[in-house]
Length: 368
Image 1 (cartoon, rainbow, N blue to C red):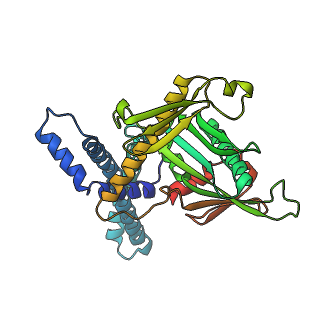
Image 2: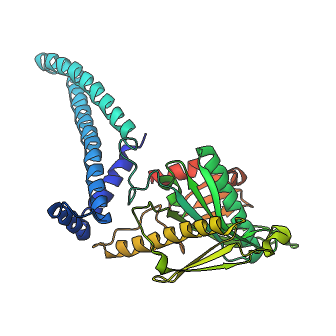
Image 3: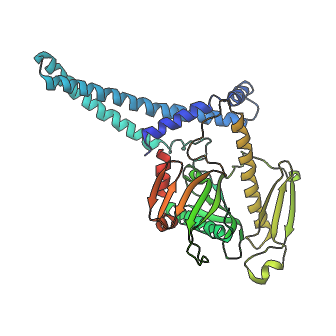
């Protein structure tokens, strides 16, 4: 169950989002023209209001429990002091009632907390709790060692996904000469993914001695991670006339087959200039679908970033919303240590973490 502190923080975030004039305008516009289709912002506004009202119930319940706890302490002090016998009798009678009331309210609070995330999804910026996500991992500085580190990051997420019961599908990848990943893009679905994986976006840094290093020197390399919610059909529409689609021969592992047919796909989104590719599958249609999934996620990300910049009184950057250029975590092999720089906390047993043991790190980030 979520902690009260996290719920209060989420409630404050929602209040800030509700101050966005554009959301209010769209909601009022829909209210005046009930026959017109609801805009995306209007739907977001309605969901925010629902979530705000739900969280208020939890916060109010917790506040009442704290007030009763304070009254219990006051009565216990009166009883312990034994200065006034009549007052002690009154305090003892009230104390019994207060303890019973506290138990009742705590039971109600527990039920509300169980419903948080079930009756309404965990709301983090947008309603993305159970939505599929697309993760992009790219080798950064460090050449071949960076590409090999990208493989480690991909394996870490793959194994963590298995522990969570999530389904994984690779959409595109480009390998290096050593068998590392210059880039790998994959989809995760079938769970409450975004609320956990949103913390992984940013620059991951590794410090270790590469297998090719003869002098035993420690090298520093990086890989970048982007976590993109996969758009729902109603969230974004890309028209066919906005696309330039090219087919070409795939390259990389696969033997002679990869050069026989033009199965790889490159799609250019003309309005934004975004370009995506896919060559992992053995037919054009599947690669085209994969490329479109990547493109839709990137277009939506671009749109959301533009919307966030418009919000008045730009919100303070919070843990879990790291940009691609921000260093978020270091994996130090010589010291067997992983450090998350956003919360200034470290964990040992690095190999175990790279083997998918991410839950403790994600839990710490959610609580911060």
